[in-house]
Amino acid sequence: MYGTVASLGSLAVTALVAVPAGGAEPRAAQPRAADTRTAETLGTAEAARRAAAAGIAFGACPKAEDLPAPARCGTVKVPLDYAKPSGRLITLTVSRVKAAGKPAKRLGALVYNPGGPGASSMYFPMAAELPEWKRIGAAYDFVGYAPRGVGRSATLSCQSPKDFTKAPTQDPAEPSAAYRQQRIDGAKAYADGCARNAGDALRHYTSLNNARDLDVLRAALGERRLTFMGASYGTYFGALYATLFPTHVRGMVFDSAVNPAPGQIWYRNNLDQSLAFEGRWADFRTWVAKHHRTYRLGDTPQKVLAAYEKVRAAVAKKPAGGTVGAGELQSAFLRAGYYDDYWAMRATALSEYLKGNPRPLIDQAAPKPEAAWDDENGNAVYTAVECNDAPWPTDWQVWNRDNTKLAARAPFETWANAWMNLPCAFWSAPRQEPLEVRVKPGALPPTLILAAERDAATPYPGALELQRRLPGAALVTERGAGTHGIGGGDNACVNGHLERYLLTGRTPVRRAQCAPHREPNPVSLDERAVARRPAPAV
Image (tube, helix red, strand yellow):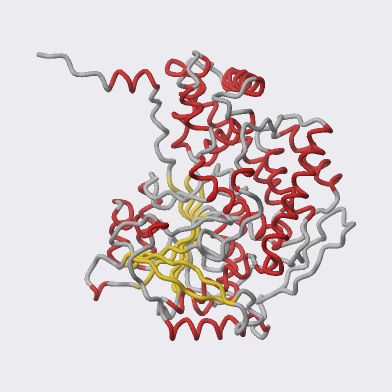
């Protein structure tokens, strides 16, 4: 369950190996080293040559992209299967805003990916006008794109969007045996839907292919070397790219890094994430308790938890607005674990609900019908990539044992995360063995890693592990903070390191630390109402 939005103001191929049907544990990872002679690597080179010759014909963006000028849109074709570069091609959508500065000062294209798997960065060019990005936007073309499977890029779907967003859901914190069986049945059906809808193409939605697609995009943009910024999951396939194509790298920013160790992909990373979210959930409750005079939810984190559980029990019994049950409530508050921008909103929603006004909670937590297609599509790509990338346990008892044990320590996210990933236990497509992310000293230009110390979606040890695997990488840490995706956000120190790196190539010697950004300002619904009142006449 990875983040998909970084703040905008706020090997080469491994052979596909099937997991044995009776496997209880994911096999100990047998990571593969990059090999420049594989069919997939040669296929990538051929596809990149074709893309360089064809370029990208940028024009007015289709209405479906909802991108105003000066953004321009185009497409690039990539092989579905890089071992067969002359076989079936798929089309990726691309967006761009040209560098705003003088042509002589242009440094190239900055390609961005916000994570997921399953997120699009088609919106990214619009960040060029934001204050935090303006100097970078003067020097770089800002390039966004929809990775394979996402949006209009060879769309992947596993279920009817209407069924996917069906609400309310209950998702009990302590699931009964009957509920667990219900979720097992649902996971099997979802995995079957992915296989049925995608057919033989399903196996090709992988992180390795996302890295190869990135090299074809680089070539199509006319860039000899790539400048890339990836957030969350984007750091993982960015690291794969650095491993596969180190000589094609000009610069790379890894914002909120996934732990790339092969044994972590993806089952154990998700367990670590669930544990980390418990700490971030405590951070939120501590902040709410500090502002008890505003929210009246309790002056200790435990009292705030009691208020939350009271609301959870109420919506489980009678869903708010007929659509917000316990599942929707948990999902809404999980966002507060990703981004503290949500803290005041979520605290207000709890406070108002307990005062008899459910409207803020309904507005914040109810599924949005207009987002159903995007939500289902993003989940389908997330599932396909993570299930294809590595071995997963295929015995439910392993999942049950691990998550039951973990939920005793970290009840907030554990089971919700397990249900999201459970289709991987019943996946029919072949699984890969993860690539060993590692680059020889001197093979890669200096790179920059950004990490918040209390990030739950990509726990901090992942940033340390990535730095160990990329010699010459510098790590900037935002101490005591937990926002997921910190580049271009609220921390001027972090942004200074980011801007310096992208504009000059300079990094801290090895590690630098930034004080945390300012905590959110508590603004209650009542205070906002007071602020909107007409000023008295004088």
